[in-house]
Image 1 (tube, rainbow, N blue to C red):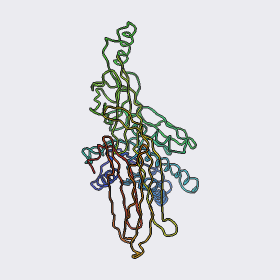
Image 2: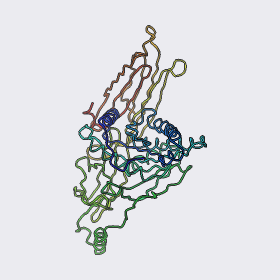
Image 3: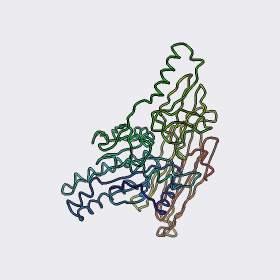
Image 4: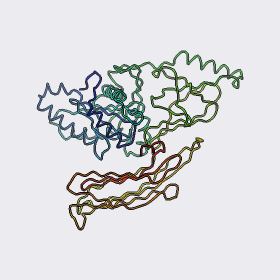
Length: 452
């Protein structure tokens, strides 16, 4: 069970997180915590041997679901709890759902064992500044994720708003599950000054959302000063003096992520985030404005807003945009698995410096074919072919031959930028080790080009 004191990260933990972050090219990570409900009581009632065996099954389910395909990274085990990180919130939520599915299947197939009940909490935030991971940032988000997990009951997955907002739209479009999303309200968590919005995701075929049974919920009463402001604005409208009144913009329930206005300046808000609304001090004249949150090299949140005279209250309705990316891996087995290939189409918007939206589409294809070298069977040869087409125009296409010692660890990685413009750039990356090879063709936002 998680300790109530803040979690300390070792240098080795931070190093593992930094390596994963650099590999995935992101400054934002999703932190996931799991915990076995009632593990101490199980050990006392059934004995240490039974508890250890149950923990072994728990670790097998959780670690496999998190790390399969390189999706996430298990950072550390803390008793019967696991801490992990992910680069994509949709992947983190999908793997959390998989953990609960496999746990339910385990319980059905092991009626003689104690019921395994896993609680899961997820939180997302920025952990790096100027491409360097900051221990204080990591620790802040780790402790928030662990507090969220303590609110959950067995079989539940609780999320903070950043994870919910980023994952919901993507999983709605991509997942075959019938998912339900529920806001339970703002809860006061131990050690945190501000109340946190708690969301739950469920597979509707298995369960219904249930609010925290032990959490302290914060009242959602509208601040008196904001209610008075709304009343005064309404009175002004009635008397027909809208053209002369002062324009004020409030942001309701706005998350902690850095928001950029019109691709120029950060959005600055005054007021306590735990309140319903905060006043914008960044100038937002009457008219259309573009808001965006830079999540990673290939992911941004966008929102277009129209500011009118008088009182404006902006609620978070960000749309998450993913840049095109296609990656495949071949783990060579003679006669069984000698080739992989895939083709996928993408639609996505880009915004130029004038904030004009450019709707784009892309078609990506990758193929990896492996075989032992004819002259040297201890050497693997991989033919990696790729093609990228954007808006009907060829970005690039090529076939690369890679060689890898079949029986010796020798990791070889390469990344090539193939095209760039004012908004984004395209690259191809390859990786080989022993009898395995990976090929990726992707686009990323141009601001990340300097990291190449």
